[in-house]
Length: 115
Image: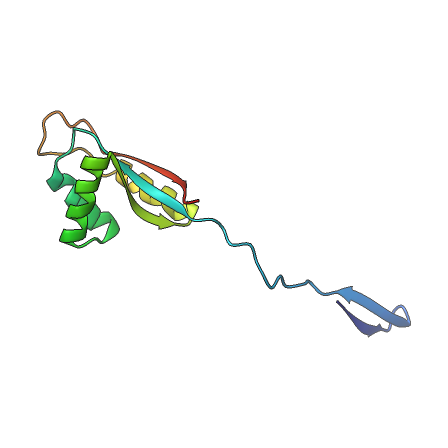
């Protein structure tokens, strides 16, 4: 599509392109934030972290902690890539488990495409 208008300088009609609007913009694929199990964090730590970082209620946080413990990993969020990276970084920045002396740092988390 283009739009024409009269131009005094050229004495004619100038044609300007009009940007087309894509009726079907590409939707970015979602990513999973995956919490990975280890033996250096207690259930209490995992539950508190999930409540604070992902706004899970107590039951949901507990069930997710059980899944991490029994399955070795659990999806804790599915979102855009940028937000998934942010949530992963929040997990990595959460710090060590003060209830466990051998805990040296935060839990491990990865992001992966949901497809």
